[in-house]
Image (cartoon, rainbow, N blue to C red; front, side, top):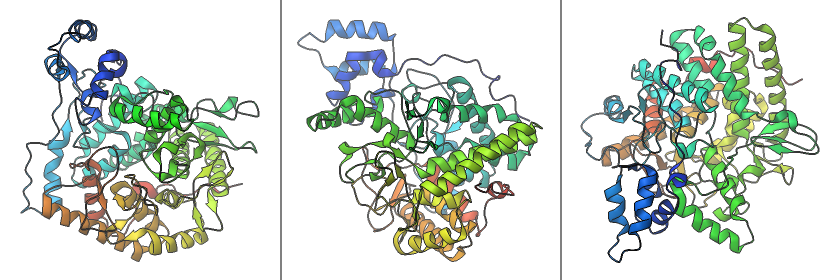
Length: 528
């Protein structure tokens, strides 16, 4: 049995994010394009105290011979890209290559300016992403399990538990500039995966952390009503139904994309949109994991029309349903039967509300809900498969969704994230590993084995082809034209890549079955 997931590590208070630590210097470095990617300076390690560096900057910047790039290089250790020295052996199969790659993607926490300490080693995604990212980690764990790396799984679950205990939630990643937001809540899935490995007592061990994460997502629900219709991540619809949305408390540019956000805010202001409003919507979109997608836009072609906090997402509410069900199981396993019954009831209520508010009968699909217009959004996305993934859709609903998957979403290289081509990376023509897994398991759960097999075959084939041609596993793929790379977004397509590796191995090992820890819910709560 592992040590306690929190007590093994001395807690170190998080430092302020780098934009607050370095103020005008941070702004100048980002806005003067000292580095092509804003995240580079956000992750830089100061050689001296921030106060001393800022004092020197105030003195030196007025000198005629001052060069900002040289100042940064002399006062900071600038991070190098991950895996720059790694050359893949393309004579290996993709799977054999991936089994060997885990060590290259494993990091140990070495706290610096923005990196938050965590107690155990962890897997990074790769490329520009040098921390432990929240929802990436679950899909990475699926592959670690196939590779026999169960100790890595224990480590990463403990890391998430430590972050929940320290900050009240799992941040987007273990960086100070991510503390104000989380990502899609997959911690319950992580715990259930580990319970499948170590036994049901795992649920009892991680129960306090499951509960604490749940408290984060439902914070303030008790204050909602006619006078206050939303608070942080909870939102009250006109008839008193409370559901969840994504949020971020800080209405300011993201340090890791500072220049991009400032420039977008300038465009928004010319349209009468206040920068603070735009910043909050942008940050909330990052919490969704789908950053960015036209799911969050008023005009699907324009990022400047982003309005994330007004959208009630179907996938988030399905994940919280699963968390409620997991809490019920954990309380029952711990012999707290009244608490178990309470969470059974909460899950049943959320199940009913998901089926009521996200099902679009005319379209025959689950779609996000617009809290302003009180109707479904027009965007068709794979988020609509989450009710199938967690097992609450009716067989009739699943049949209609399956037809849309076959005729609209399934492409030459797998399933496309949305049916809309917006220029954003989470829209067409791109496909992403986690959504392939969600769709594959959703289809299997409802018996659509042939379509699931086609999805699996096409995605694995595309991964194999790109690996044989480049020696790399990519963050995302163009699944419509498999001869072209994926595009869109704020940065180039990254290689590495943690969750792509994990899903490749998990899909390759899967012969059309639901993974065990997702079938352990013996009875789904029925809406009352």
